[in-house]
Image (cartoon, rainbow, N blue to C red; front, top):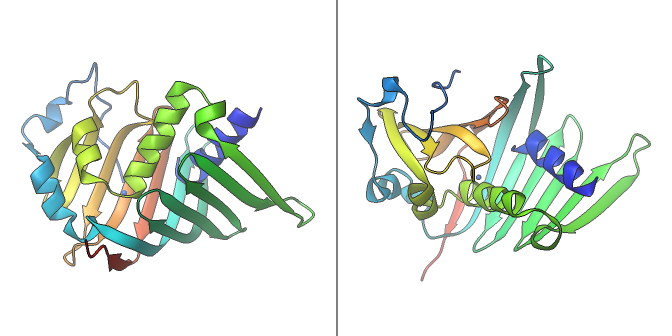
Length: 217
């Protein structure tokens, strides 16, 4: 029951940019993408230069999750804080408050029940969850951190148009997402993120310009 609840929470809030291309079959790119340019790790780092070797990041966002099986949209807004190497605070501020803190393998979920009473739940996903779920959590963390090396190692990257990229997992059985897209603004900020989940639900994020503190190493 705890496993299902934790997965539901992350599906609702994330699942670390309209329409997505057809899902890949057997790891092969859709025909519509074969003519698109494949982006290397080095090129991806250039496009996401602002996010590489940062110490902390704070950004506000708006989020829409489309649950296709129910025909509903869940809209929310909030903010995210990232501190390298392994701390993420994902906070929903409206329409109701909720936060998920990830630090290493520890996860703390703070929410409120129908009576307004605060609920705190703590997990260590390496100890209690399946190997597939642990990998999903790892993928999620790396995406929220915009880890270019991890993304390039695990996804084939296509440039759909200038500053607009689509990602297909190289081993789709290990990824919680069947497709992803990001759009980068002229300032070099990730402005939009689209996640398409295995069950065809879609999550849309629109980000404001982030506040970054660079690692001086």
